[in-house]
Amino acid sequence: MGSKCTCAFIGKRLQQELKSVKPGLLLLSEDKGALSQAYQLGFDAAYDWTTDTTWVSQWSWQTHYDEKNSLTIFNDSNVSKRRDLLRKALFNNGDSRHLRLRFLENNDMPRFIKSHDLQQTKNDDLSYIKVGIASGLEYKVAEVAKRMMKIFRLGFLSIVFNSNTSMASSIIWKRESATVWFPAQTISGEVKDFSAAFIIVHHDDTAFTVPINNNGFTFNCNLHNAANHIWAEIKNKNTTIYSDTLMLTLGYKLLPVIKPFATVKGNQVLLHALLLDNPLHKPLAYLWKADERNPSPVIIHKSNDSIASVMLPAVTGDYLFSVIITAGFDTATFVTYVTRNNKGIIAFNIDTSHAEWIDKAIVYEIAPHHFVDSTKYADIAAKLPELKSLGINTIWLQPLYKTKHGGQGYDVTDYFSLRPEFGSEEELQQLITAAKNLKMHVLFDFVPNHTSIDHLYAKDCIAKGTASPYYYHLPALIHELKNRGYQFVKINELLN
Image (cartoon, rainbow, N blue to C red; front, top):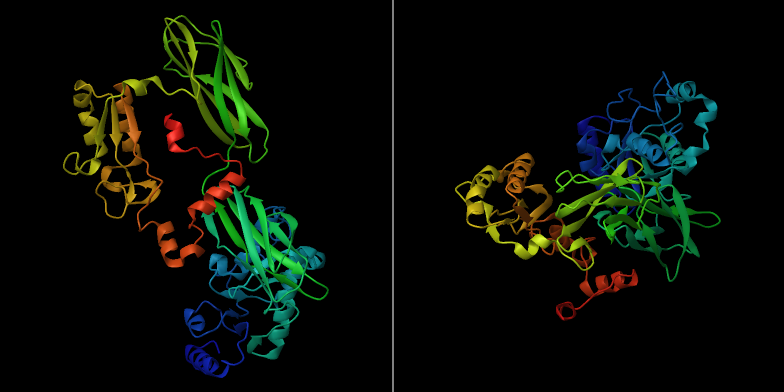
């Protein structure tokens, strides 16, 4: 059956003969499973007894087992990593389209026991690691192994029908895996053809129960990792069903949020770091620093505290102070400043104040695509002295991000990448440095309120409509944000 001609014949015949059977999974045995033709002809999975480990994870076949250096699903303390190792073993090291299987019996079993010993072979961890199958069905590893061993004894061609885990019953998520930009997520799902009072939801290493009402369920979830694995299971006396794994990836790193501000008492300035949010609840360390460009050097007292103090010199000007917050291996930097003038010391208030330079800004807008012929960042930097001589103290750069059609750059397709025709990120930094050396400010034109129709999120919305994870109905979004404590102010109220 491993030959192409036999595979083609069997596949076409099966397509004709099994229309009424509708098996949950079609298994091709004694085949490496790497040939795409097998799957094009209708097979869902394949296995064989090859010793070639280049196409699967080798954890269950290694004969020289090093417990310290060879992390496996048995000895890695991280449940998510164990789950990933197992997925690699079953899904061709990351190819999730089709399932490749190996059996822990016959010639494999003695080697496995020799490598891991009998107790580890029977390790209960296997019973709790959830594995996804290409068809969307999910099983416990132990159940998969038992079912596959039965299939093997049936012969070379095997069809998996419904057994202890019902294939008709299912848990369906009402959203897709996606990159999201808000840690607090509301997730809903539906239970089909299964009766239970509650569902067990797993979010990485934690689990909690959610009531089922009218075959539906909804829960709130705070994402705490870059990649969040969410799956669910329902049990009754004789049956357990599992959902697919919902993968929600945060588009940014979760960091503490600090509100830095200063208070003034005579010549003394108190620097405050007010903690607004510590999403991962890690211990925080503080470090206050004075900007080296300040009008005069200062000494910061209690620089490792959330409240530090400075005696400000008589030299006038703006004094900038940054506080570096360390949470584990991550850091975040926040800045505030005070101004000394002839009247005394004025602390910047982020709620009511704005930077003083804004009142004196004379802005020149630059459309890089036709500033000069074939504009590069270096061309703009070369023109800065001329602009400065005209009284310009601020340049405004139209969007520099990747676009589909170029031009002024407002059809953004990737907010995290620069348009290559203008130069590299290092060359852009050189432009900014050149402007600052001339006491000029640089504004970026950032347009998150609309994207190119060719942006990945826009394409997804066009293809899936309201089912797209990137589609938001504005009234529903505003309602949800209000429920989470956000406040909205009308424009005319801001102008009064």
